Length: 226
Image 1 (cartoon, rainbow, N blue to C red):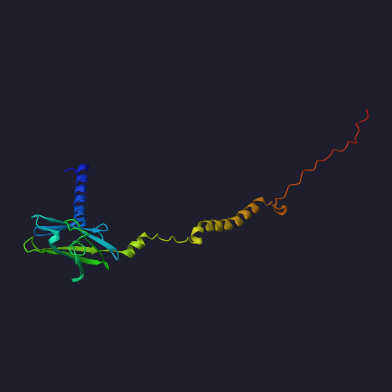
Image 2 (image 1 turned 180 degrees about the horizontal axis):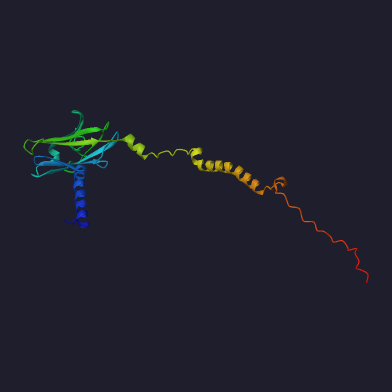
């Protein structure tokens, strides 16, 4: 069976979509209890940072359309290692002091909190109606991992100091070249000197004497008397 490039590309696309879905679900978590549910969004970027304020925003849904934030005794709490470390009313305006400032609604539930350290926390939102039977009691539990710290972010944003270069490491090439030149120069001059040096007369081969030319003497003999 021959596998085409189109099939390989389709398979890779499906794998990418499959692995990206859990990330999207984690970014905006929906929890439900009976007919009431809420989507949680955390600022910044659904990735809270220790020792830095984080915002929690809830958007409620009710399939029976009975849930009324103004008549709900809703509470927001944070649990660490099985112990409650923070708690407050969820909806602004449900107490007498702030009621005139903001009217509770299904999409304005917000809380701000600073996690003390990196850890795994539980966010619990529970509520019951002020008037019995108005809607069902509910409890929503969210697991939140705080994996980043403010110090780590500061270190990431701090420019890394560039170490000053070592003189020897920077100039090692030039230093080696100088050593080679210092070693080669004496040998070069010695070679040139030997090349230009003339051969001494003592070492020259003996020369053969030039032949002596004999001059002819004038003849003293006279021809016979006739």
